[in-house]
Length: 441
Image (tube, rainbow, N blue to C red; front, side, top):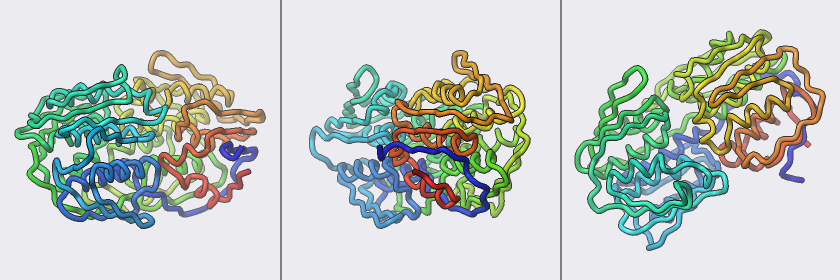
């Protein structure tokens, strides 16, 4: 029973200032690039989640020296193509799609086979989307019908490629970018708009990269690098993790929160833009530029009047991890909200579009799914008085945390399974809620 969370009362009004742990995407990218640098790199505020811990474990198995102390991490890089490991190596990526896909790009030069495995959720996800372009570099793959377990064998002479990324997947784009580091010549990527953390890190590290930003796509040109210098990095707070507390505050009564030093990179802040279209005001203060990333304090207050929205699909990629929370806001809105072209949601840890609809129906919110779109019929006066059970969702951390936010803001008696799923991305989630006065059984 210890892995089940029971909630039977709403959160009481609060007024707090909190700080969220480091950005998961940046924590993983820092570690992977630090492993390819020459010399010692140090990160502060590194996220201590299972995805990041698995990243460090995989690097150790590849011959990289790693030291950790609380939220400080030190990596002694081995240089480009410097991994040293035993034959028939197996790397366990756990639940992390970012790790499993990006590390394939760094293994493009591997001389012997490396096996990639993951948990049940990761093993159901599509890997053809990344093995197909990496094959063009010269690597070869054995997969389980396009899924994990997967075996990669690199090539001694990887050559540059031209690649069209049309899904808006930052993971696929970044993996190809990392593979391009080990080539002689120029790789050209025509990528649908998505998170640009890897591009910003490349720029900061002075890796040869040119970016032509267009309306819906970016043309990215990368020349193979000779070496990467070691670098120190203080990881900004995670906007995806912060979003749970943004929505919690919006949907709670007489509450207010300030979240410090949040990464508000424009490729990640679709939720802020969507909430603004729903007539929700969020204060952005103390803006600063840190090595290409934009940080700020977010000031959020309870909202009594929320407008329905026909969500512009160009905001999808910048809010892909936050849509379950956005659906909760739409549930409280006056009118019908419409979200379309969300097929990428079902490529996550669980089929999140389906789970978003399922949670809303359990709450009593009418919704309709058609292909990859959803209509949500908001009810500003909804008060839940029944029992709701959330289980069998492939231990998707965002399904768990969204269910917790729903229970604390809409009421009812909730029984939510697999509370340890939060260890994947936000292990201190429940502790942060306790700081706001929530008491869990």
